[in-house]
Structures are given as C-alpha cells and as structure tokens.
Image: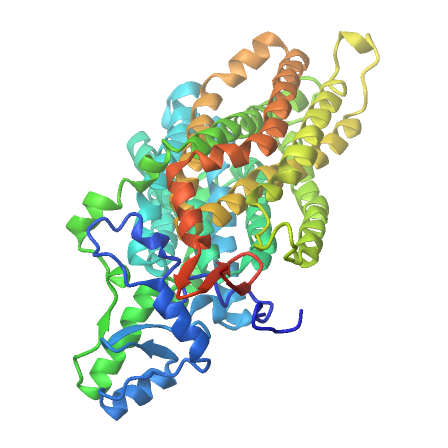
Length: 586
C-alpha cells in the first residue's frame, strides 16, 4: 500500500512493534505491577517516534560519552534521562539473529523431550521396581508416577511468575542441573523414600520446559515464528511421551536393572545443562537493566533512570503481587473454559495411554517389551502429520492484508480465535474417529472367533499421535496472542490440571480396565471423546465471547490495541499484522 498522510506502512516484521513504542512491554505489564506509579503518556512517545524517525537520543544535557554508548547500544533516552528500548535494537530478543533464537529454542525443546521421556517411564519402571523396593503395585505406581506429576502441578504455579519477573535463563539452567540430580537420587537409593523425593522434585523442575517455555517463545518469536516453534516444542513432548514406555521397558529388562533409566536421565541432563548455561537472558526488563549498568560502569555517570514499568520488584513485592498470578488467572472465564477443555483432552489421552499396554498384552498376547513398541506409532504420527496444519496457518498469516473501507475505517487484526480451527475442527474429530477405529480393532465379541490383526490398530495410533501435538500446541499458541508476556502464568492452570490427571488416573485405571474388559474400556473412552468433540467445536465459537468477559484478557487487549490521541491524530499499533496506522479525526 503506498504511503500517504492517512496511512503509514511499516516493514512486514511484527517483532518491530510487539511492545509499546516508548520501549515498554505492551503496557499491560502494568497489570500486575500494582506498586508501580502510572506510566508516562504513550501518545507523546508515539508522536515523538513519528516525528523523529531515526530515534536517536534527543537530549544534549547528558555527557557525550553516555550519549555515544546509548546510541551504540541502540537505546533511547528522554528529557528526564529515562532509558528505554529502541524497537530496532539488536539486543531485544525478537531482534536477535535467527541463529541465536534457534539455539535457545533447540535447548528448550531438548529439555522438554528429556523431561517428558524420563517422566513417562514411571508406569513401566514401577512394574519392575516394586520387587526391589518390596512394595505393592499401587504404592509403586504412586511413587514413580503420581509423585512426579504432583510435583509438576506444583511447579506449574511457582515457576511461571518467577520467570516473568526475574528472567528465565537461570531457571532453564538450574532446572536441567536439578533434574539430573533428582534422577541420581532415584537411581542410587534405591529405597522408597529416595524414590518419593526424587520423583517429586523431578516433576517440579520439569515444569520449567513444560510451562515456562511458552512465555520464553513469546519473548523470542513473532506471531509467524511461534506457529512453527510451539508446534516443534509440542512434538518434542509427544516424542518423549511415546518413547518413555519403550525406554523404561527395554532398559529395565537389561541386566543392569531399572536404575539405569535414571542414570540415563542424569547423563542426558548434564549435556542439556551445559547447553542451557550457554544461553543468554530473554527477559527484556532484565536486559535493559544490564545495558544501563554497563553504561554506568563504563562512564561513571549515575544519572540514567528507568521507567517504573521496567523496575524489578523486591522479593517481598513479588510475593505480594505477582507470585499468585497463575492462581488469579485460574478465575478468568477464558482460562476456566480452556481448563475444562484441557481436562477432557489430557484426561482422555492419559487414560488411552494406560489402556495401550493392557490391550496388546492381554488381547494380542504380546510381551511387555513388544507391546511398548506400539507407542512408537504415536511418535511417528506426530512427526508425519503435525506440520500439515502449520502450512495452512502460515499461508493464512501471509494472506491477511488489512484494508480500510468507507464502512469500516479502522483496521483490525485477526481474532486469536482463528488459531483454534485445527484444534476444534480437525484434531478433535480425528481423535474421536481414531478411538472408535481402535476400539473395533481390539478383539471383542463383535468379531466372534476371528480376531483382527494387531497391525490394523497401528493406523489409528498414528492419527492419535497427530492429535496429541494439536492438543499440546494450539491452546498455548492461542494464549500467547491473548496474554502476551503473561502466557506462562496463563498456561500454568491448564498444565497443572493435565499433571494431576496424569498422576491420579494410573492409580486405578489398570484394575478397572481389566475388570471391564479392554474392548469395553476403549468403547467407553470413544464415547466420552465424542462428547468432548462437541465441546471442542463449541469452544471455537464461544471463545471470543468468553475472552471479552475475562477482565485480565480484556484489559490487556484494550491496552494493546487502544487508540492514543495527540491533537487530531489517532495512532494505533497492530501487533499481529505489524501495521502502524494514522488517520485524521473529523
């Protein structure tokens, strides 16, 4: 579109305007900073931006060496000596090189894979460890499975607000180191108390790559980049979920014993820990503090200041205002709706995963080691099919061209609810279809004396593997659009529900399914999934209305898209489509 007094185009890269133009993080950062003073007017900063294209510091009362360093570091400073980011600064995480961002993303995905892999060995290892520990099957499941997921549910509420205030670099580094240490605790006992403690702490620190990661992706990637990155992160989790039973079964059968499952976890996390220690911080406020301290140290000038919105709170202030943010967001109607959706999807997948070894050992007469190999079909389905919907998402992202008509003079960004299409209309129906398909491949009275081949059940497992990726990626991706840098706190309740269900269901599902019969158990799951499909489809149409009734989400949207007035000029920042538009007010 040609440039004109009525319209100003900006290069197509939404990393340029993901935050407020005065250098803040989309002033919704004020929402939980209850102790902060009101921010300066954003309108003056925007008009300054429009009238001062090169964004060089305009002040001449600062020492020249300070001004030179500010310009070299691509920082802006106002007449009050308040330093803020320039939106073209290469120090901002979204402006990092692709190599830097891919390195950070790869480290997070490796940590996600490792934690998911070791976490999902619990049910298999419990069958072998009960004899060494001299405990019952139920207590063994509780020790290896339930304690792990209880720890992860607790960590889901603790670590997200910590990362949003104090940064995530140290969290990822120490989480990897601590996860390896907890694996060592489990392996070197082995006694009941070391298993209980080790698995609980393992689950707690595993919440960092499982929950905090989505907030880190929001720091690093724009809307287009997150489409791929969140999907790859979800695939890494599904791979760990699928390979965990395989690893647990085959390693436990070795002469060295089940302890080497966790020795392997220790070795893997030593490597991941080194990988993470080489990362850099992605929290913009902390990075800005570091830049200002470097300038003060180099010049000896102590007159630079930061806006109140960039202030890092004390531990007491953090405990009072931010620590409970995930619990506060749990009361949001939007989060409650998604929590219900997550309870159905994660609950069904957890129950189905518990059913798989029962079906193949009892109905197809396979050994535990051979039956565990069927989980590889889930991994294969995740790899083969998960990229197809992303191609459509990318195509639609490029196809969106905002226009202004006589009937609608205001340009509007696409609704975040459009990201739910593959969850509601593709993954959920396919999940129902796959479960019904699988239920009729299990030997049952319908077939009489003729039993179907076990290979017929592999195809629905491939489809379910794809569905697992959608269930684990679409909701976090949606939340990054709605809650921006509070995404991790918003996602925490959803993941906590998943963790609790994953910890509770294995305690009783094996006995119940064996009593009910594997074929009837799968029929029950398929019937429940059919009802879940209706809820998933309804969510696509209800989500916008529910979002608008959610106070926190609504206020963030208003702060992100509201008009800022200066004279007869209205300036609006479109974070999704990277457009800054101006129009005269009649």
